[in-house]
Length: 151
Figure 1 (cartoon, rainbow, N blue to C red):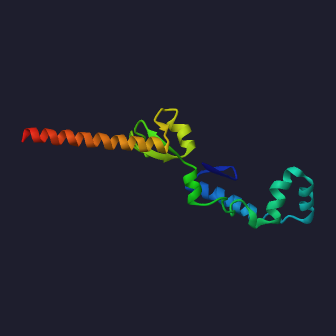
Figure 2: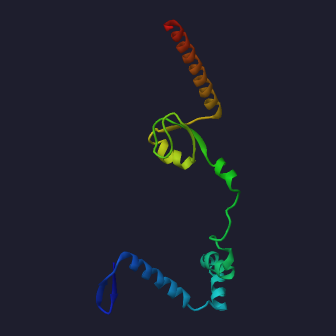
Figure 3: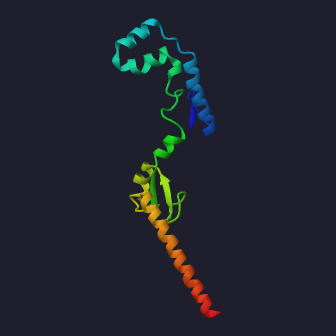
């Protein structure tokens, strides 16, 4: 990035260039003339500008940046996720066989196209857990029977 000043090109460090570029906008906005009543009237007459400019000029405290999000905190986060069973290892998410909660967008954009996961219900999770417990009991019973034969 270079800064042009009186026909001389001066090379600048990228960070310095970014700071100068930001300052340019801050200074230009600070010294801009204040809007007059006629400006408000023109903006009210023009429906395209009305939604953007007039509302922000008349009530600067009601901008979208300062507004609170609708809904709640933790309740909406949990409701916005779906339960999936991973079929492959997914970095940052889990191992194959894990049941995890992910957002629908993550499932649709990454997990489903790569066939890395499938949606699973609570009943299927409970059934898989009971089957795993039953297999564990059978393997323990087989191991104890084998141990008795060897002793």
